Amino acid sequence: AQSVTQLGSHVSVSEGALVLLRCNYSSSVPPYLFWYVQYPNQGLQLLLKYTSAATLVKGINGFEAEFKKSETSFHLTKPSAHMSDAAEYFCAVEGSSNTGKLIFGQGTTLQVKP
Amino acid sequence: KAGVTQTPRYLIKTRGQQVTLSCSPISGHRSVSWYQQTPGQGLQFLFEYFSETQRNKGNFPGRFSGRQFSNSRSEMNVSTLELGDSALYLCASGVFGDSFGYTFGSGTRLTVV
Image 1 (cartoon, chains in turn brown, red):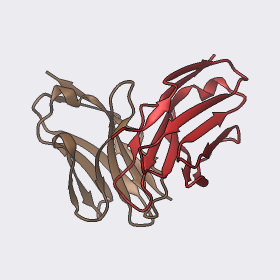
Image 2: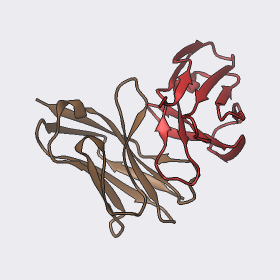
Image 3: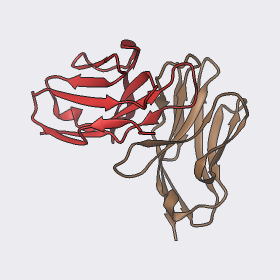
């Protein structure tokens, strides 16, 4: 069975500072991993996905994530936070069978201070 | 290219009633998944349909059901509504066998009073 743990329900950074959102996964098969962002009263927007092609994945809006199998981690980073990055971020895992079933972490709310 | 369209956007129902939510996937997407989002339980998978067949089902009671039509549009139905069914219901569409990720709609906000 797959599962995802996001460490830290709230993360606060200053504008221009490094953003680091942590995600650890558990999967009995090679996983597909995703990061989604959700702005208030909206659906989820795909930031990036890992599908075993490359361990460092670059996404939209300057975000990237590195797949580390030895640490079962898929942390999301951005070198310099912008006010518009304030939102809720979700890490998700899917089994390799493309089942259409995503298992989400509990989410991390990112606050960006001016 | 149109995104995933969910209707209605907001809905208020009374306990005991039933409700039907609709999801139109991106053109060419044949997989449609449904999720329930609540502050307490987070995002939980309800079910997934592909080519009119339910392939996966989450751990929800039988009051929650769905179907998919030949044009890939999907509906989910909740019968005998309970207060705890108040949530944001999200639909996502994708392409089978392709890991481009899943595109989500804006959701239907259901409030049960």
